[in-house]
Image (cartoon, rainbow, N blue to C red; front, side, top):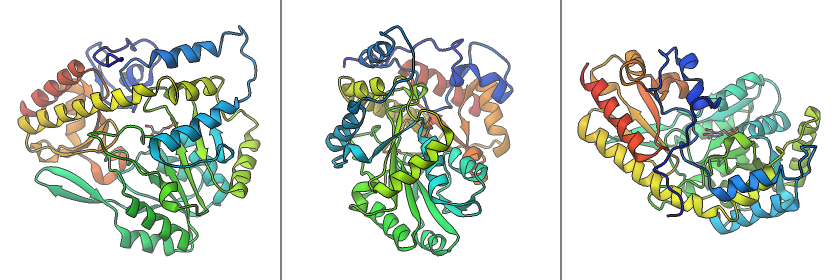
Length: 397
Ligand SMILES: Cc1ncc(COP(=O)(O)O)c(C=O)c1O
């Protein structure tokens, strides 16, 4: 391994959302002992090649307006081909200041106020927030939960999806693929079926693939555009922000194969009169998808071990907790409701007694009170400390 993921950068006191907004967000007694397990960024150092590339953006000694270098587009196209087997033309790529911002741009370009937008709860909360904030209506296609001897599995309710898509008010579906928080990977056949249902009903499919480079246990990702086989009314969003720990650089992109649809999105971005790529986006993309690519491979190995460790530890010590066995993401989704503590007290107990802070399940849907999303992207020793504290706080009730 070239990277040492056993070391964590010191982020407390650096205006980090994950480390420095905890006390205010969760009304916690301040202290250096708190371990954040929320916010999907990682307590690992970035690849040195990525940091060097970012610094090189400043080497002229001036920080004026910049344009994107053509390498921004070719690096993404090459990555899609080599990593995911998806042929993408550089012209089909649009920069975006974030994946969620790109979703908002798609909502603005292809829907109107009052239109319905399908999401699949439990779901990454901003899908719901941006939909509501833009005056659109959330249509819930809830994932069906199965319990296989304590392991949580989630399936798509295709009958319900067909029903929702057939409603003439429904104009868009925002797919989270891989799915956050369940870590579920969708197969080619599932993606093809989702796309078929959407296109038959003229529902625009937006596929958020921000976690697609984080595969656990050798799992294999399928991009939605591959399953759509060249069809229209679909776009894909990506970014190296999760897999290369670069969320703060605002370097994301949209892949929109249809030229007219791209023009519609550009018209929306034009209304903002602001750059859709950050100052350093060319450097971030070309380094991540170039000389730093090994980082994603090494990361997947380390995260697989972290996930295995935490699942095993929690199952051994609190068998009442039901856990996902994610194929992707560094997020473990856990149902604590069987632990003998009232569902609405579990989160506080973890915060105040264990002094660890996961994301509370109800953020992902009100149905999931008593569930937690646990971020495992940290050095193993830190994760072991968090695991011990969780067990102590839950068992000594
Ligand atoms: C599914 C998903 N989409 C988007 C984002 C955020 O992306 P961005 O910061 O580029 O808006 C996250 C962050 O956790 C995420 O999990």
